[in-house]
Image (tube, rainbow, N blue to C red; front, side, top):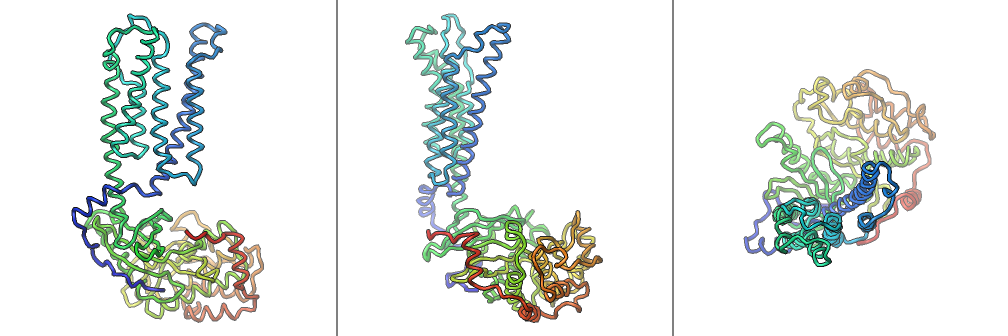
Length: 532
């Protein structure tokens, strides 16, 4: 692990002056990942509107058929059908445009505002294009144009100024159609001011839409401020879990990529509660432990601290690859030589932790990362030391009875002594690592169960089948026996240390997994990303 020489924010980041904050906020936009998500929602909305136009046109013809008792004229296309067809074409076009990943999301959203105005024009034509008699009643109404503006204000992030201009344009489409019809002699509704009497409720809704867009804009500014963590600028979301979210990030001065794990207030529970206290304790423990461990096979920690909003954060090295759970789920079980190669590296990380008197307590495929590091392929990193515990600490008193709630770890990889709430040592992690090896070789969990309590009960009582009986690929007898030794119910029957387990894995008479094989696999299955 390589530690950063940048300042560490153990408390709150240094505050900025109001003048600096104000100047920053004026130029802030929503983050790219949020804009992309908004453009995706816009595309879905346009597709929904295309469907609504098609359904509306069809229902209109069915209504004519019902009213006229099947008069053949119900099949004839009219001007309303032309408006619907044009709207469908524009809607589908915007949907397809928004699906192209290389499109600038801000441009797509600006295009969405123009689309809103076009849809309002189509609705205005649908509402007022048919000739009207001069005695048609004129009274205020909320048209679909106003409703459309409200929907777009909630879905399409825009500055209040943009929403005001686009909203006024959209709300004016129906009045413009009325004026055109008056000029064409198709509707003599009296004084031109009647146009505004009919549609003034839509303009009221435009005002509401501006308020909505202002709320969204302020949320965007708060989001960007929350993502400015000292020297790091957050980017796209790359993962999430029960204890927070992980974002791709960049150091402002060094341009070094990193991964930042955020633990917000919502994950901590009520302020001052026992849940919040334990969550903060876990955060600090993960940071302090990761800072102490130096193995290259333990994920590196660069920084940690607390934001002004009370969000806890860890800045870690950004890893290129996938965890073992994703590897097996997507590609299937791995050859025995590769499994040995992976497990030996995990043993190196655990050996350092155990030598320091620490037990990980949550070893599982999702917490072991496999990827590229420099010129090395299939390089292992052990993740998430948030449940790490010193062997000198008193037992938690957690047992099978608390498995559904407070028991730490993951039931499918939990050693019997951990489920019983007994004193733990490094052999607890070796049991879990044996479960990981079993999963790598077979693609199956050691035990199958319908719930957490049943799963833990099987780990306490049932004897596992040898991996070779469930694996599709050959498993050397020595590896078979070693995995079963790790899965022994009694810790005394397991390998004594992670170092001993690593040596035993290395002594297995099997063809070694080479760097050339690893590089070829990664090039075929997950080509290296291009430099930014």
